[in-house]
Length: 94
Image (cartoon, rainbow, N blue to C red; front, side, top):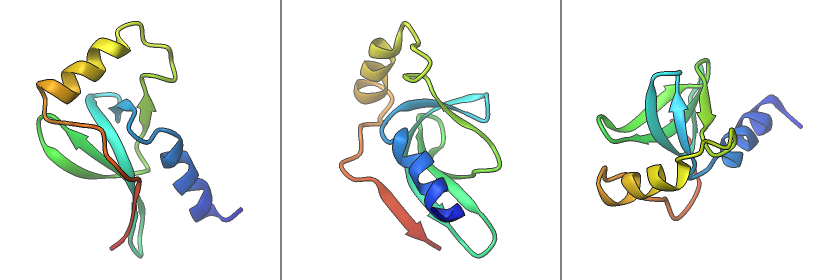
């Protein structure tokens, strides 16, 4: 498996999960992007909208760590924070 494929698979594993981006911001992971210099998480943020964040930083799934209030947070993201679940995992070449 190539380095690129590993990065795509890492992002695909947390597709539509609510995550903590760079240990500071609650987001929803919706895809993967790349350009000639870097790989990126594509996330939806309640505060900043669509973000391409370098994969040098972390995007940790709250679902994967068995966060006890995950179901409530899922409802908040969908109903109040305008960060609904995505229909398809995006892979974008910039």
